[in-house]
Length: 322
Image (cartoon, rainbow, N blue to C red; front, side, top):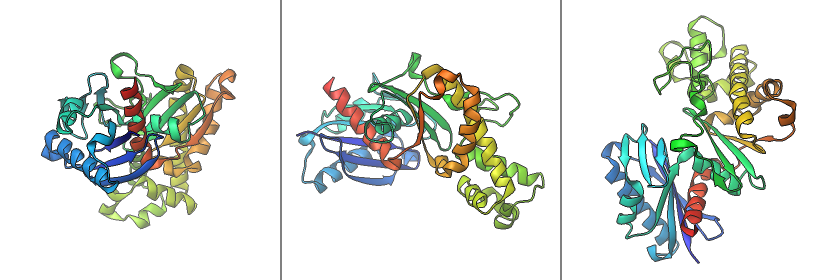
């Protein structure tokens, strides 16, 4: 029976998991990425993590069917190349070839990390049982992916899903992409914190002023705003309401284009739960045609940190079997 490796690589940490042939996650390990040391260092680290996992289960590389990896940024999954990753500082890195060579010829398949996250939730998480699964991750930024009957949708140039870079009229915050007013400057963990800090700077009263006085205001996170929300803080409640309403506008466009059965929402900012989702749902329904309204459900992701690992492993199995 073949085993599979799923790798979820980020700018800070790498999570590597071992899956059996039924895609059950047997064990996983996490280590700092060390991206500043270069791509070769990171890929050799991943190889050592794979060997460590195999050793813990009494297995060897000969027991592996394939390795899958979710890579941040833009990816060519056909050629296995990381085209551009701001988090890793990678440009045109032939990941599949390089890691495959280090592993002695084991097939290696890579794709964008959000697509792998969505693939995992579609296979084993909140999207299981649905034919058309849209995944949204709300983290440092916001991105989307679509799985149709087990197949990922890519679009031209593998660029589908960059929902976070739809510009919003009236918004001017500078986005990491270089444009201004992108959705992810609002509906993301960093966007939530930014909006709250700007309103505090304008003199609005809030518990956050007491919790983060003076220069400590820069430490405010989306989680702190959820905590203030629960304490009845008006500013925190208004910020999450505004963010939820803004997210609804972005989802309305995506729903109209992709018509999903289920929308799975994950990422750090999704931990706000109904504080964010309730105003989003309320604002969303008037923005879409009636024929869409009863055709989908919205669910929080179930697998959290494991979705990318399981999705990458499942992707590797599917590609190796194709």
